[in-house]
Length: 380
Image 1 (cartoon, rainbow, N blue to C red):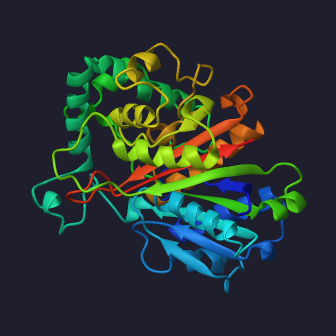
Image 2 (image 1 turned 180 degrees about the horizontal axis):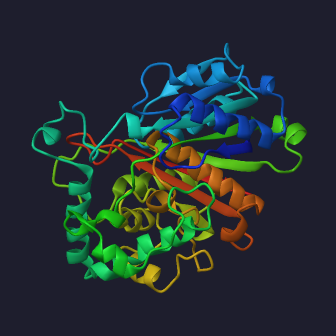
Image 3 (image 1 turned 180 degrees about the vertical axis):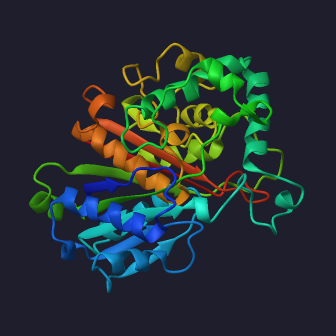
């Protein structure tokens, strides 16, 4: 099967866009990805659009704005992993030999489609008794601290780091650093999670142009970044109470990606992970095998996960700093990894990275550990 490369990326600034809609945001990101790839729009043979709350045929509305109506296009909904799943669909189509050049994008205008804390589907039995995502992750934080003897003030190093990184990112929703004291003083959401421990409601879009090895060699002018693996899993049915302080779903999805890319966690130079809450970043980097269970908060406190640290995590600012428009998030992670591997990340540039990883996990369904988890490995 052919190799797959990312030859163009683009995104909007994440934040609140009251004068825009999901289609116009998506069109902006797609135009930028095409410009970045340096190709004619008609080189694109198929498209995949990730979104969650935007209604029917959102992808078609985006492509109609940029003159690409008529392409084979599939809309993908997979909770927070929708955009990442759109990338995987394009990756698989190229590997299968169906297409040479594919567009994958995600778009979301959450401020007009959603308010309040995210909950599972209203027919979900856990939602019926009041389950919300902040509630779930608050419980996970308490369990994690009890299991590993971690202090909450150590965990607050995560949002401080991510918002400091976001201040260097012109596409981020939050552009001001925060102090540990500010995190601890922010409004309580679900004990011990406070406002600055939670990803915001965001609007935005991101896009990537994928190409086969053959097409990339003729089109990318040496700027293509290999998408060495794109893995997707759904959580196992929980017949007994699952772990609250470790993520087997993240571990297993990462194992698939590492095997496909012929690497291990020690080969990863930096990662973008799904930090929807402060505790989530710790759970994900440990599930990925990048840090041993229970050790990440202290490592983050020591600066090991900083942009200049041993293993930078979320140099973009992550969801906590960059923002979290659900369908766009997984694509935006890949945008950041590509820019880092190209050396185009500006003030947040990591020193000479060769292997980057993007992890996106989303959704909850009664009786399973998690709805969808993706891990993408990109290699310079």
